[in-house]
Every structure is written in structure tokens, then in C-alpha cells.
Amino acid sequence: MLQIEWLTKLTALCALGVLLLVPGPALALRPYDSTDADVAKEGEIELELGPVGRRREGSKRIEVAPAVIGNFGLAADRELVIQGQREVALDREPGEPRSAIVDNGVFIKQVLRQGVLQDASGPSIATEYGLLLPSVHGDKGTGLSVAGILSQRTEAVSVHLNAALAWTREHEPDLFLGAILEGPYSWAVRPVAEVFGEQASGSPRITSGLVGAIWRCREGLSFDVGIRRAHDGNETIRELRLGLTLTFG
Figure 1: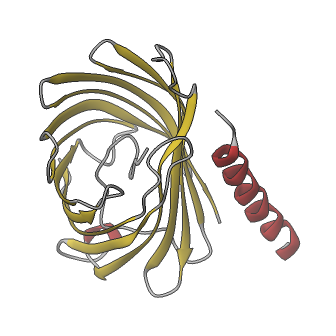
Figure 2 (figure 1 turned 30 degrees about the horizontal axis):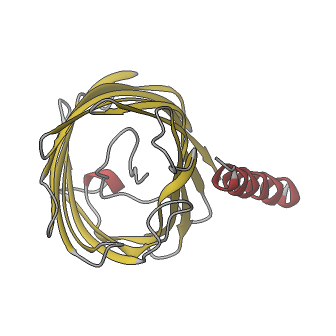
């Protein structure tokens, strides 16, 4: 039984590695850019996969396939987070690479206060901190990020608030503020929404809104869809996100 358990975990790790190395961003909790104040249980592996995604930035079309986040449960209410996504430019400019692996990062998330997401009372509070890694055929710099997360859940609604400070890959300060709103957690299919704003020094402000749904097919398997519209300065961004979350443990 122990050998089977470790084989399952090894398979998940290999799958993550293969996806990240496919030749050719950062998502957190699918299908959002923000996250919640919870972590994978110790010894558990959670894979958030976005095998299909499309984004339009002005007149430029981009295929996102795949987007991958691996969450590895550690002791003391912590998890290791590894993420990245492959983007393919469908309308390439001269000299632009066809594909890139971007939004790469390695983080530690830690629960600071056990709350409703950990089957306790009151809000859950967590922090997430780590490295923004260089892209493949993209930004070559390395950055840092630290975030605070607060989550509260009632029978009718779940709310997750995020605030993050970063030193970007371009070596500029960055502020991110986000909020997730979800329908009743007891529903098999629950409606979801997210808004966020982001401002990096010397760059246009980004404002974003997303609506979608999460279908909890069974314990350890969920599917999600999200439709996002954002503004990056004067440029309009439209995006479709489709994905799933698998849990091994």
C-alpha cells in the first residue's frame, strides 16, 4: 500500500514536470489570479491544470496551454507551490518567439490562523511568499513576492481577500489587491467571481473582473470555467479559462 501511495505521488510529480517543460502564468486558486487561505494537507499533492485557455490583448490572440500549479502539502500548515504556464502567440510579430513559458514561480504558503477553511471557527488567515522565476523566451529577471490572504465562509457565500507586494522581474515595485466571491460551498456547481487591481511602478494600472463556475465532480476532482475581462492601461484584455483540479494523497 505504501509503494502504491508513493507511486501515485511520483506520477503526479512527473506529470507536473512534463507539462512545465513542454516547448512551446501565474494563476493561484483556479480559475482566479487570487487565492484562498488554505493549504494542501501534509503529504497531499494538488494539481491545478489549465489545458485550454485563450486570451486576446487588443488585437493579439494568445493560446494558454497548459497552465499548471502544483501544491505539495507540508507539515505545520504549509505547502510548496510551483507554477508556470505555456503561451503560444497566434498573431506573432516579426522576431517574436512562437511560444514561451511564463509566470513561473516557487512559493511557500502558510496558514497563520486556522479558521473556517480548516473546520475551525472564524476567518482563516494565511501568507504566501516566494520567488518569481525567469521566463523561457520572455522576461529573464527574477523577483520576489509576499502576500496576505483572509478567507471567510458562511452557508451562503465564501469571500477571499488578497493583498500582495512584489519586486517584479523587471525590478520594479508592484501592488496587487484582489477579492474572490463564491456561491454556497455545499452546491455541486457554485457560481464564482473575482475582481483585482494591480499597479507596477512605471507600468499602466491593470483592473480585472472574472465570472465563472466551479463543478465539484467528486472528492478530489473539480472542473472550472472562467470568463475574464480586464484593462491594462488603454488595452482591453479578454480571456477564457477552462481547467480542473486533482488531489492525490
